Image (cartoon, rainbow, N blue to C red):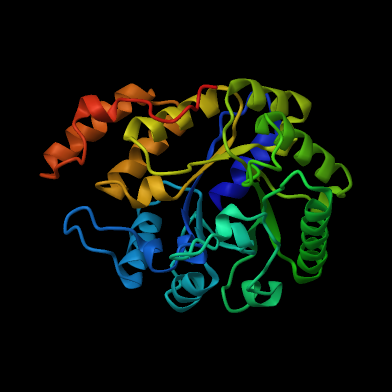
Length: 324
């Protein structure tokens, strides 16, 4: 059994008592950032090639500490189907099912500042066939505008119906509104209500396995968990930030009821991704606190002969307002 399925079964069997936590690496940045998606190699200072980016996918899957590897369809076609990377692995392969206009982060373009429009490059048949997976991420960025949000929900309905016919499971990502002029003043309660209202009309068999949302602090997370612990809320990693940003986000979200976390840039841009992931796993399993993990991570970088991009004191600073 894949670790994801085992953990979801435990969580639903005992929502209050289960200690299982789902950890994912989001290696789907090529669905958004174009050539910048692969990031910069911290050792050479050069941009990574797509082949280097995919090599990191292979390394992290073989390490075996995450539960989901999220990829683009083209990456999954190569590593899941052609290389058969997941054949004997407990890790679940997944792909990004849609690429709404707000994640079209292209040089010189202002798409991310415009209200999101629904869009899907791949069909469900291509996801289950060419990409070889039975799990996909579907993403919605509500705007607070009725016409735009109804169009996004209609696109999500069409995807669900196609997925039911094609045997594709999904998890749901809901971003905060990306246009300040349209957005509600407090995105945390708005997103909670958006999720609750959206899922109320969906039968159990068609619901997402779990949620991926920005972390808006303890109160918003606790409210969602208290409403329905079977929603299985998860948080997204966001921008790179400091090492303590990533570790504290995971620790605080877990403490307040989150059951999953998906990190992309924070893993990709770290000095040593395998060591970074090992510390994320330890925090997710309650074995290390964020501050301890940050100090341990720096000590291990030193042992590996790697120079961190920040001093330990600088890297222990919380630069993002997770604890709102």
